Length: 151
Image (cartoon, rainbow, N blue to C red; front, side, top):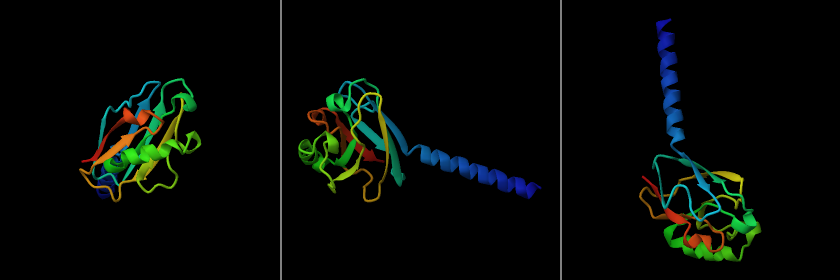
C-alpha cells in the first residue's frame, strides 16, 4: 500500500511539474483599435520551450480590413524586408508574402472580437538571438513591433 501511494504521489508531482513547464510556454497577446500590443515592446519566453503557443485577441470593434492586426515573428534583420514584401500580398494573405522562409511564425489577420492561436517550434532559434515581432498590416509595422527573446 505504501509503495503504491509513493508511486502515485511521484506521478502526481511529475504531472504537476510538467504542466507548470508547459504553461510558461503559452502567451496571450491582446490588441485593440489602437496600435499597441498588450505585451508592450518586448517579449521573453523561456529558452527551454520547445514549442510556444501564442493567442492573439482583438479586443476592439473594427473589422480586419479597417484595423486588422496579426503577430509575426522574424529575425530582426528580416523584419522590414518581410513587412515591405507583405504590402503587396493584400488582406487575403494577411499582408505577408506566402511561403516566405524568413517568417518564423505568424497568426492570421484578425478584426474586432476575433482571436487566433498558433503553436510554433523554437527549433533553430537561438537563446538570446535577435528577433522582432510585429503587426504586418500596412503602416502598423512601423510602430507595432518589439523584441522577442528566448532566455
